[in-house]
Image (cartoon, rainbow, N blue to C red; front, side):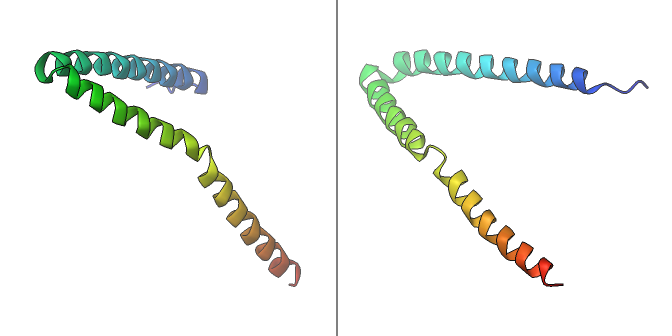
Length: 87
């Protein structure tokens, strides 16, 4: 059995990611069409409104969680480096 190189794994990972993204986009379109035909335009409009609101709220986070984690790690790292320099 031949082992794959990192380049081959990267190419396979990229291919799977692109296919997954295209499938997600296509499924979003298909479900929206089905919802429109089944439930009516009013429900789809309200559903779209709430989906857009949730997307805006997720964008407002803008990496605040990552910044907080980095700040907490930096404090921990400083405490660790001070205690290791005493030895």
